[in-house]
Image (cartoon, rainbow, N blue to C red):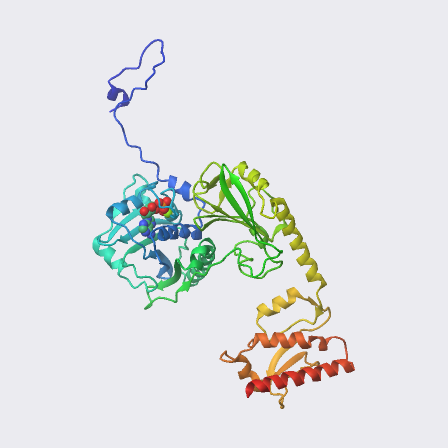
Length: 517
Ligand SMILES: Nc1ncnc2c1ncn2[C@@H]1O[C@H](COP(=O)(O)OP(=O)(O)O)[C@@H](O)[C@H]1O
Ligand SMILES: [Mg+2]
């Protein structure tokens, strides 16, 4: 039937006057082109997609989430996210599979658009299966294939038997007596060949990225113990699964001591009448903590604003035009909790991947007005952070020069010594090693061999239960090195050097023997 026939009308001839009401006939259904999913999830990375699934698990009250790679035939075939949350009934799972099926959310829930599950999944995979079991309700399952979705929004119903089978598999880390399984197959984002090395390298890398991202995004939940997240690998050709790696919290503000006195400071302001607090932190200079050297970029790029919504991190660094990223601002990180009145107001808008917050010009103005109880302004804070950076650089230049530390301690210790102290030019590395000194002496110095010898008689005592290895006893070795490294300076020992060596040998030997008694 043509549109003309449907209306039984002819096109009017002659002059065409304006009509107040647009006349319409029957309706036709025009489902959105499923390619909109590509547009929505277009900027997802594997780790941001997984975070979206974990959001749902948290909303469902899960205490544990397991992320599993399934390898068959030397290829990662399936990817699972399983939780022990409250699960879904039949009606709820249909809602879950609906694109844009936003529902009413509780005050702490992370869901928002009713898109996350679908957008995240289809950004990575062409097949999404959701299986769920809620209390006093039978297991239910739905599957969506992008190929099928290309002409309709049809969803397959997964058989009851298979649902029970999947729920009953040995997941080890999580027991979904109630809970939900999200399973991806035909994963575009994973390597497609059948090469065991490629697959294992991919899993290693993907698992690390997921650990870091989830560790950071959910650090408040992980620290509070609200949720535990594990990652493992199941190779169907082997019996059992590999070890579970637990995601550790990665707090971008987790320094041991702040880099400036009186910090962090709470700068208060209001935006559209809603109070907003910017908790301004100054990191200590040149920190080697993983919380400072966050993965994926340099610390310099991690300066700036950290927005949280309901304790979930939405943005890790960046200044949103209130400042300019620069080297001497790398110690500045600001935490801002956005409450519901603000997120997705005109002023703050999170992107669908929940990895950035867009801010309106009102935000910069509000920060300009912000101040702490002691009167500190945002501008003042920025200056302090710059000062702290400058000072930490100057301090390190003024530090003592020492001979380079060689083998016998873990590489991490070597690197730290190298970074924190300045190496004397023209000197060879000094190694720390164990050997039988043929006496009770705790240590001896061998300038010809550039070695500090530790008496092997005390090795067991020093390492305790730890295994003897080339790089064992890092603490004792580092202390001895710092104590005696200056005996390697210069080309000969003066009387003072000789006396010092004797003194330290006597003291340490007495101490170690006292411990043996
Ligand atoms: N792991 C899960 N456990 C329980 N319910 C879930 C789970 N994942 C998704 N859902 C349901 O599906 C709905 C849609 O999820 P999603 O597409 O991520 O959008 P949103 O989280 O914004 O609502 C959720 O609101 C929730 O009701
Ligand atoms: Mg969601």
